[in-house]
Image 1 (cartoon, rainbow, N blue to C red):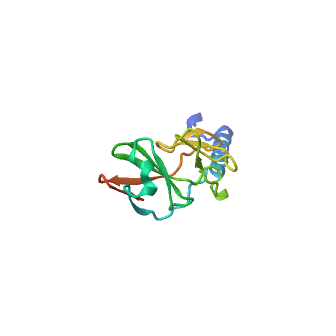
Image 2: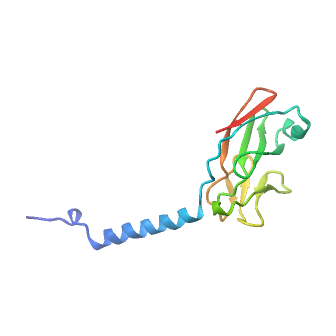
Image 3: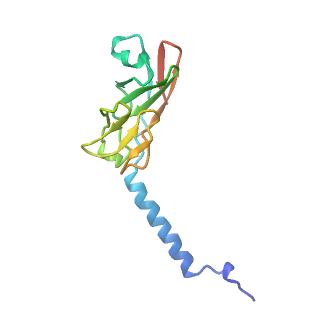
Length: 147
């Protein structure tokens, strides 16, 4: 019987499989997803505590999610609702805050990562996963945040 190299798994194939498995395993330990928490919040933007959300680029902290939410007004009718729970070593429950730039949320005490308020994407590591985003709908006055 004729055997070709393609039909015979060699030691190199086993080594490659083990290497990929271990590399993937290390990454998963560090980047832990934010806990799934039911979110269904409705806020009236005419209330004084949400005045900052009246304009594009405005933001506000809102109670909810795993470590609280940051709501950011992306455009006149689009909002970003992000969980404040840093995605790097999620078990540590690090919480991001909006920095002086007013466009970046970062944690300087625990996870040392930074994220864009517009979409939660990572701007500075060690986090590799962006902040958890929640769905939003807006009717001109009322903003609904949900998952």
